[in-house]
Structures are given as structure tokens and as C-alpha cells.
Image (cartoon, rainbow, N blue to C red):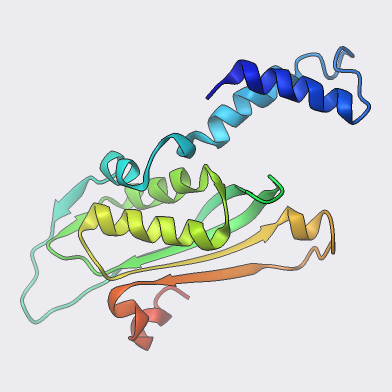
Length: 187
């Protein structure tokens, strides 16, 4: 990430909207924004495979041949930025479910995967697909589901300004595509 270029352009943006980038309250804003962008867009530098490798710590899970189980984690908080307006996607919760093969993912790793995947310019629909792909790569499971519910400031703060609008997306893979009981687990 080129922080010097970000600072240069933020300064220009401040000038373009009619602000004085030298005034006391704005003098350090280009640096602050560059530091913030480095943090909130960290996921841009990694592929889904690299995120799966980074957070793919798994543990052996022995189970009898006649048992089946799903791992479900709900209400993982994330935020992201819409790639269309660079507007904040906020108050987002992610529910993740997968059916393990022989290994289970460390629970904190599920939340870390969601967090890192959200640190990109995103579409909510793609974010769900990215998380599902990363979980699948990390666990080896083809049976993954992701539900995301969130607010988009491009809907709530501009344009239509509908502050109560919430977007819900679901990504279903493997048995989650056809099994209603499994689908109900992520709601």
C-alpha cells in the first residue's frame, strides 16, 4: 500500500471539496486517513488461499461413522467498504456453518477469516462467497454456508437515505444448497 500516494490524494480531495488542508483540524488528516486505510484495507494484499493458509489452524475430530455434525458460529461482527461508493458497510453480522471432514477449524479462526475478508473494497454478495471459499479451503469441507446481514451507508446516508434498510445475503455450498434443515442452522 502506497501511503504517500494516499496522503497526496487525500490532501487533493480536501482541496477539491473546498477545505483548507492546512487548517488545524485537517493538517494531519491525510496521514490519519493513510494509516486508517492501511488497517481497514489490509485484506486487499491477500488472496483467499493466503487467508486460508494464514488462519487455517485445524484440529483432528474423531467421530463415529454414523454421526454427522455441523459447526455454526453466529453474530460475528465485521464492517467493510462498498466498492461502488467506498461507503461504509456497517452493523454487519456474519453467520458461518460448515460440516467438518476429519478436522475442525479453531473457533477464533472463523472470526479472523470473516474479519480479513471484509478488509477489502467489497460487495456484500462477494464477501459471503469469499468467506465460504476461505472456510472451504481451510477445512477441506465442500459443505459451507454463510449468511451476512448489514447496513450500507450508500443506502442510509445518501441517495434514498433509508436508514432502516438492511441487506441479507446467503452463500450456500455443498449439502447446504439442498438441505433445508442445514440452511436453517445459519438463520
